[in-house]
Length: 306
Image 1: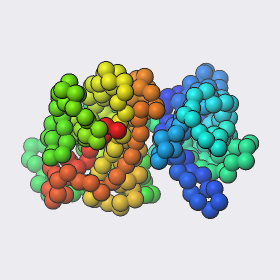
Image 2 (image 1 turned 90 degrees about the vertical axis):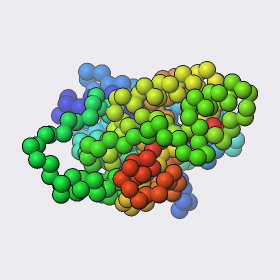
Image 3 (image 1 turned 180 degrees about the vertical axis):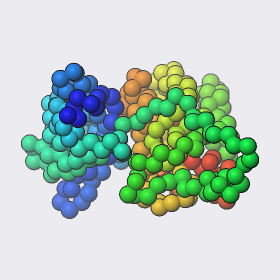
Image 4 (image 1 turned 180 degrees about the horizontal axis):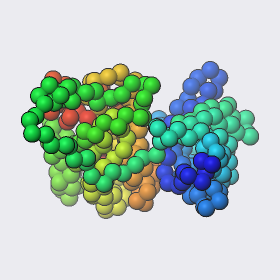
C-alpha cells in the first residue's frame, strides 16, 4: 500500500481555491505533517489572505491511505485578528502524485463555507548539482540546444520538469536595490529602509522547479539572523522568472518559489505574520531578456522591506 511506502512527513506548500458566490478566491496554504509508523498523521496548516496578510494556524489530524492522505482540521491555535469573519475548519482528501511530488484534491468545511480545491507540493533539497558527463569533443549543436531550453514549464507539467540547470541570484546589485551589507549599513545609520529591495544572493533552484539546492540555505540563514536582529521588520518575498514560456505558468512557478523561501524562514522560527510571498513571473525584469546571462539574472528571488 502507498501508506507503507511513502512518508508524508514534512512541509507541503501551495494554493487553496474557494469558489464563493461565483468568485474564485485564492489563498496561500501550507501544511506540516508528522507521520507515525502506522500511517497516522498529526500537524498544522497555515492559511493566509494575500491582500490583508491575515492568517491562521490550525491543528490537524489524519491518515495516510493507498491514494494519498485524508485530513481533518481540528481548531485554530494561532491567528491574526479578523473582523466579521471566521476561519473555515476543513476536511480534505488529497491524492498523491509521485511524478509531481504533489498532493491535490477537494476540501469541505462543516461551517457555512463554500468548498474548494487545493494543490500542494513538497519542496526538496538537493545536496549538489549533477556533474555533467565529459566528452572528448564538445557537441556545439547540443550545447546551443541546451542554452535555448525554456526556464518555465507548460501548465500540463507545471511541477514535473527535472532539468538540472541551476537558477541563481548572484552578487549583481541592479539600480534601485541594496545589498545585504548596504541594508544593514542604512539601518545602523537610522535611515528609513521601508520599500528597499534586496536580491537574495546565491539562492538556487533547479531549473523549472521549486526544488531548492541545499547550498542556498546559507544565504537564507543570514536572512533569518537579520530578521531576528530586527524584530520590527516585515518583508515581502517575491519570485521572478525570465520571459520564456507561458506567463501564467511563470507567475505560478515564481509564487511557489517565493513560498518555498517563506516556508524556510517560518521553519527557522520567523513569525508568519512578518512574511508574505508573491510571484510576478516575468513582469519586472532587472535586465533585458536578450541573452542567457541576463535571463539567468532575471530568474531571481528578492525581498522588500514593508
